[in-house]
Image 1 (tube, rainbow, N blue to C red):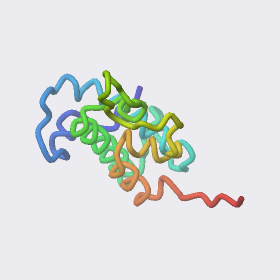
Image 2 (cartoon, rainbow, N blue to C red):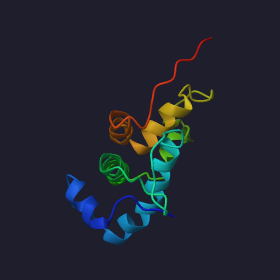
Image 3 (spheres, rainbow, N blue to C red):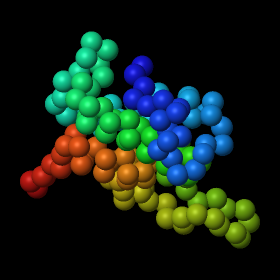
Image 4 (cartoon, helix red, strand yellow):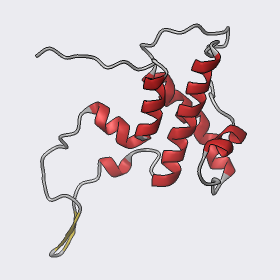
Length: 136
């Protein structure tokens, strides 16, 4: 599995120092996997190991990876489990949504809430994610 950023690069990127370096180390691979998913339709040259060869694209991958980890550090929810939780009731007290209907969020909106908007913006600005027009 490729990792687009190192712990040192994350620490330089992040607004706050991580609470646990080993957790960030583990998340580097997962966040890099998310970047791969976001850029799967992008066209760019890679080296033999699959890393982008263009320095600007490589930097966008690194920054997006760091932005995802920073979002997870801020929310404490790297799995996005808060997005799938419904109402919890104990007696007459109900916490969370009272709607029994499924969330009205699109897949893209759920992804953005799970990984944060900054990573998506970084990749869009680098030309690695393009908007699509749906004709309905």
